[in-house]
Image 1: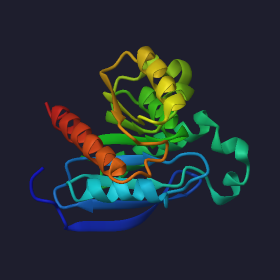
Image 2 (image 1 turned 120 degrees about the horizontal axis):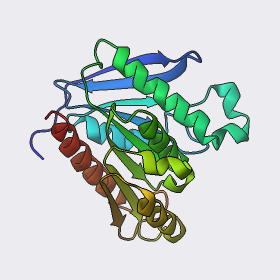
Image 3 (image 1 turned 60 degrees about the vertical axis):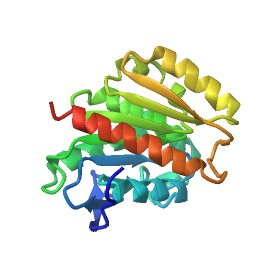
Image 4 (image 1 turned 90 degrees about the vertical axis):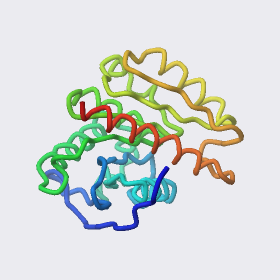
Length: 219
């Protein structure tokens, strides 16, 4: 893995016409930027996503954690499962990164958890030239529906071995993908990867996937 990067620069940002709140962390000489899409009922403060983000940061990857809904929107539970709406917010985040002086030159990856995985995949389908890689953690890629066939970014699906229903849905979704894809099963893990060592395995897999495809995108 090499030397961990502990020189991190953090700042808060406001994204899109709704001024969605986000937090950017950039390591020195960042290898790329990973934009996170949290799951239903969560926010940019999701403890699992913030843990994954920090571990990616010390591995040389920039991160952007943002709230996909305003506080008022989040009160309406229909919005939490509105994949086109959430995907649109991810598209806004990508466009923000492309217009930001510090981020514009970085290759972009998307990391989605639960329903956020579907939002990330739909956003990747809408921006095929912009997204270098996608990672789903315990995600619901099946909710991306017909847009799955339009995804061009290499996609890694990470599922807990004990999360049997979601594992079946991921297998079905992978069969519909037409891009490079891989399904990784973390033994002993349930849906939230709360078991000791399982979230660290997610970090390892995601870090390898993003680094490899960010490097490939250079050529």
